Length: 346
Image (cartoon, rainbow, N blue to C red; front, top):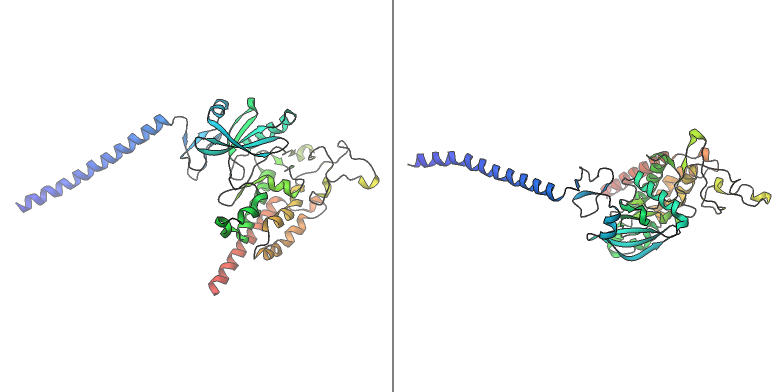
């Protein structure tokens, strides 16, 4: 009797396991079917969190969704408050399906060309170094991007002064942000949209305002309204705006070369220049980003030589963004190893 019971149990166990497995598989198939029925306009995000072209995926979103169109923006995006305004755009904090977004609206038709240029650059340059495009409506002169609650790099010190963020106020975090900035320049100079110059950078404050601080303390470039293209094959250079530029922050070749002769500024006579103007500004931006944290002086010491090269008055003698980026990454790695060695000794 005991043997027959044992035998029955031994035969019954595999049957139960098979039934259980079949039940689990059927549940999975039903779930996948229902998801396909109710989310026909969405795509599952590929591994790594990226999306297919013309799709977006923000925090708390499971799936990638196609860029919002005019009807969706009008019906689903709700303005909350004005958070920024420049010559080209007014920027509103807004809400889409409980997600906070940034809604930008053209300030004046006088700047329509700049607005459309910025939109085209946002579409062409989507990636981890550029603010995520959520949707746009050319008819209404609006575009929607991912909202970054920590603001631009102009607010960096204020962010680090907050209790919940003070632990991030280290040379490691600040050097990483500076490295991200150089990465942005390298992407603009050698990216899919050609060799682009960051022209909205005629002062330190203006440059910092173009870059947003993400919640995980990286940065993305936000404002792409002024990104003219250098095309060396056609001998095509750029000029950043139609007004005379002044000050030490802009590169020497961006200054009116005939001022000493008393010749009034003329946009038509102003010589063009290339992306090496962005390289000239790197040391000043990095100096600002590093602040006065412990270890910052050592960072400046390690970057001294490459920064001297960035400040060559002859733009042809300056390094490329790729070369600067290589040095920045090397300095960061070596300093992290050195700091780890000191901790081990202690």
